[in-house]
Structure formats: C-alpha cells, structure tokens
Length: 417
Image (cartoon, rainbow, N blue to C red; front, side, top):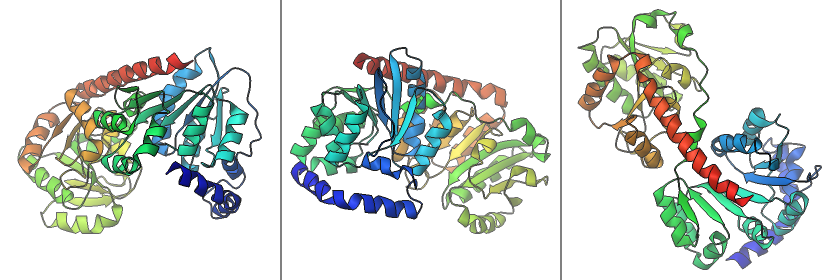
C-alpha cells in the first residue's frame, strides 16, 4: 500500500503547482502563500530548539493554544513552528498568536516525499507534534528517517477510521510504529491505536478541556436592561427537527410553576425557523423570532434565534442549557461552550460524537442525560430556583480538570527536549 501511495504522490508532483494555483484563483488558497505547500519557503530556521506542531482544522488549532502558550514561556524553546491546512484555521491561529516572537506559521506541505524533505531540510525540527488524526504517511516516514521524535497529540480514531487503516495492516503498522508517543483523547482511541501498531500510548483526556480558562465576552449585564431582567430563563441550543417541540412541551409544564419563565431556542439550522415558529404557535405559546435579544421587550414565552455566533450571549443569561442533536439520533453537539458559561447541561441519549467529553462532565456533576419531557422539566425546576452566581462551581470544576490534563500532557512533551 505504501509503495503505491508513494508512486501516486510522485505522479501528482508535476500537477501540484497547477492544482494549488487554481485553488488560489478560486479563493481556496492564499494567493501568495500557497507556494508554502510546495515548500517554497522565504524564512530560514534560527539556531536553537524548534518544536513543530501540525493542526488542520479550526477546532484542532484552538485546542493546542494553551499547550503552545505554555511552551512559549520555556527558556529551552527558541521557536515554535505551527502548520495548518485551511485558510480559516490559519486566520484563527494568526489572530490568536501571530504577534508572538517565538511563533512561525506556515501552510502544511503536500504529502509528497520531495516536498516534505525540502520542508524538513529547511526547518530541521527537534520535535514534531501532530494533532488528532493528522497522519500523513510520507511525512511521518520521512520524519522518522531523520530520527526526529514524533508525538500524536489528542489522538482521535473512530471505528470508521480504524477500519480504513486496518484494511492495510502492514502499512498501518509501519506508520503508527513511527510515533514515539501517542496521547489519546479517549480510551476507545487508545484501543484502536494499540491494534494499529502504536506502542507508547497514554490517555489523559481531551485537550479541548484545557482551552476554557478565557472568559467569554461579558454581555450579561447589558442584556438585563431589557424586559428579560424579570424573567427566569433557560436555553435550548443547537436543536434539530422535533427537538424544538420537545422543548416547547417542557416549557408548557414549567409554566405551571413559573409564570415569568422564558426559553431561548437556538436551532442548529436557521432555515427551519419559519416551520419551527408555526409549530410552536399551535401550542398557544407567545413566540417571537429575533436576530438579537435586544430586538424585543415583549412579554414572551419563547424566543427563536435566527442568527449564528450568538450562543455565548444567550448562555450567559441561562443557568441551564439543553443541547440538541441528542433526543434524535444525530450524535450530539459539543458541550464545552455552555460549560464555560457556568451552565448545567442536559442532553438526550444520542451523544456518540462527544461521548467521552460528556462522561467527564457527568463525573464532575456538570451534565445529565434526560429522555422524556418530564425528565427535563423536573431537572429544570430545581435549576431555575438557583441564581447564576450559584452555578460558578460548574466552570470551576471543568477548568481544574482541564488544568490537570494540560499539566500531564506538558510533562510528557517536555521529556522530548
């Protein structure tokens, strides 16, 4: 398999510049910096210790920021090279850390031996760290040939990914055996890595817990100047079809006890807003669609949010959040954002995409599974009688848990320099 992969990459080499140029013309690559993917590099390596991180997606980039911030403060580290693949992930990284003197950003080179070797000749990393599932055969094998330590950080292998790798057992063993250390984000991944040939495997938890210290923008007081300040509120976020009606029925039950209650529903897909609105109206609830919470000062039962990127603002108004994609078999939604806003999280049984994260949150008492309308109604009844200040313990527990993961991971990384 590896022989054919190398052969295919060799034949793609003459087409690579044309391919990247075309992508740059269609705004899928940086019009100037796309050449970095061919290892056409204008920068030279400084003397001293250089650690190379590679992260592909925005989520991967955000997850490694606390680790990088700690390593920047190490006197041993001269430079940290970070490579990304997409324009969006590069923008996120540069916005966060572009001004740091020890930081260098480059686009990740194509996985073609001659390009990879040119990249390695220029940067000569002392340690290479790949994030989650960024496993490129030619890159990994060529790094190993140079005796550069390789760490797989926050490794994530799903059953589908495992089956794909396991189909080429010998090739997979050769690749995964190259890693000096695999830090998996869950026990399932640890088991898959072992079967694929990885040796030094440790599981401290998901590093996404380490990125929750920075407080979100505080819009809570500003929002209380409107009619909602006399309301008791809860939030339903990232809801899918049928889940909005589920939440509306919960709300009807809660109204029997609380006459000043308001629920903020944030659908996952806003193109469904009109349909959701009409369904809720049939339950004789006062509902309004808004772009921002400040758009209304009416006495409402339900606010439907039809914008993206506003969830933090609404989480700050709520003690409790129901996270969608979980009553229906969708796989759940990421619970970390409401967690750092001191919200208790409720979810249905279908959370397989974030199972390990939810398990950690449950162990900390910050999340709970519900199945029926009455389940959620009973839980919310208890929560709604608490004040927001009483919920601070939730984020404090999660931050402490993230600190523990971060310290253990950093201790392992520092063994290699």
